[in-house]
Image (cartoon, rainbow, N blue to C red; front, side, top):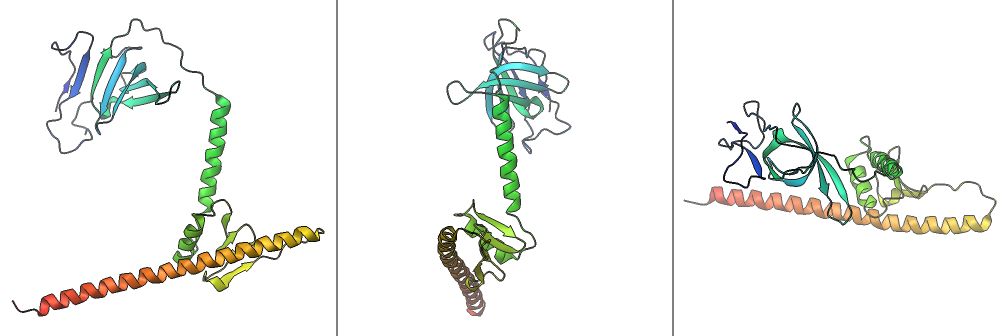
Length: 249
């Protein structure tokens, strides 16, 4: 395999293409024997179109190019008006690149301003979401308990969590092992001087408990159906195999 780092005279003089020789198609990922695409004609403010080894195409204005690492930074227009993105592309993992437009000068245009506060808010939200997702995992619980947790989580994502190996909903309704409907209970409420508030809270907890019991019953019903279907399929397969063996040629 060899890199082709030259101008194609048959193309327009403002369009330069560099392609990788992919005569060996056994693997789309370049190996150590596959020299990288490199060139000195990648200049700041040129419009570059790159095609990755997975045939993904990206076109953008060159912000920077580092020949030593073969990394090019592209300023790409977003799908929405006024939106933009910056992509760092490794040319070692590209089939080809094409310089679609040479720059008039190499004075770098200012990028769109970055809203630091917005980025910090997004980071905080992502960290909070990841921590919450991690709290949904309980490897010490049984498989059936984890399956029930995932089933309830589909509709009660905001109010479900683990309490040791118990499933806790709304911090009041608890499902203990072995996670049957008779294992659903309500935690004792904290002492409160507001009798009316306690009464309303108790009613809400009872309504939640009734709803959870229905979900648990449905979960176990679905589990039984799945086991029955699986067993019947295995039995039918075994019978077909026996019939096939016993049938005369």
